[in-house]
Image (cartoon, rainbow, N blue to C red):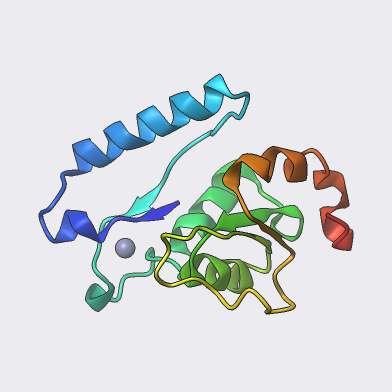
Length: 137
Ligand SMILES: [Zn+2]
């Protein structure tokens, strides 16, 4: 799930965004991670839509279509908006400490389930997903 306000500002087309998602999904799959679907908000924050993170409209749709159990789901992200999305959904949050992120969450917030120094370590966390409900990851 991604906020892509560059679309609203005319800096990138939706076709280009979908191309990036296709590449991303392919690269993850090469590493054994299957991404079912990518969704995005094409709006700017001033448009006050319901689909821009941390609003939940995009995820609400996914929950219905895939019958997701939010209490046993993770939001993985590097930005404050990702963390706020997890809080709004009642999901766990796995924060990735990306040095390039300009709006990182407060890493000391006790509501963060787990933090990773590197996205490549995510696989280890996913392998322990059965423990997610007990905050044991
Ligand atoms: Zn939107």
